[in-house]
Length: 292
Image (tube, rainbow, N blue to C red; front, side, top):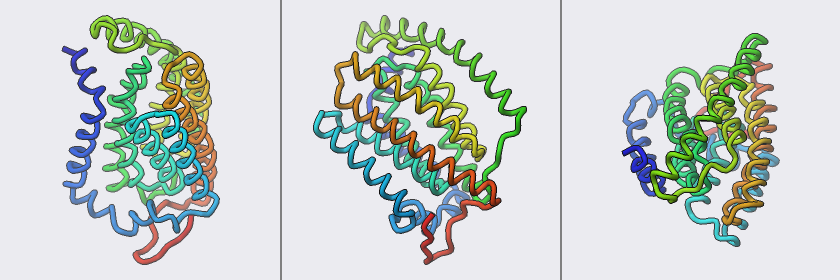
């Protein structure tokens, strides 16, 4: 029964259908619709609202990923997942804008759907079980209570607690993924590959969960966690590139991991400055355009 559910959720068309239903449900809330104004939409998607260097980073990244994905036949759904992820990270990092989380939902669902073909079941579970619901909740939370507040910072006790939690969770989750990999490959008669990068997959997933939690709570340190996670992701996809048979999609994902690292540096700088100056990411008044 559960193996059939995994096979069902590994279809990108199903993932896109779930995304559409989720967006409609979110927009059915008056509070969400009230917060998502035209000014906030333009703040997220109008190129003129970005500093030239930040806009150049987004354009160059999307262009490189598009070229690699096209030349090496990475596939439509890989492309959707990667571009959605880059746009989400850029809009959230540079603008702190909840419109980016909508794009993040699409990217997480499609990325989760295509992950089993690489044998990355930790990423499959991460995208569906954690990213998807947390992004959805974060949209509601940001638009109703937290978007207009300045970013926060962790204290020393919180940093120590989360560090210990990461170590313990990574060890436990590595064994969980090994069991899940064996079970799902057996249950589906080899339809999906066995787990390929166990402990790195576990660590990057654990770091991602912490980073998304900190993002939801609007902590600046989320970007430090993202940077550590991205470093291991780059290593993981270098390995996948060296041993796999999906060169085009693997290379495109590797480029996106490098882009996430650069975006993390930009996001850390912007959020740290906002936190230090006690400034929020509130959108500009209607009919104004302010590059940030």
